[in-house]
Image: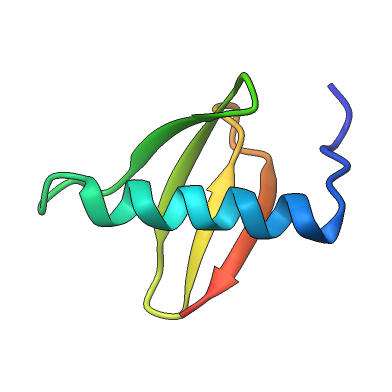
Length: 65
């Protein structure tokens, strides 16, 4: 599988969807799963950034907190 090729606008849209999913997840959950543009993604967060990966763990995008 090749790396995702997203333009800056798509990265912004994906990160916005990921942020919404992260905020809507159950409080103790360590990840959120989303479907964006027909593809599955996994959202996690560190103290510094929100991370969006493929279900296989390949990084796709991130947003700094």
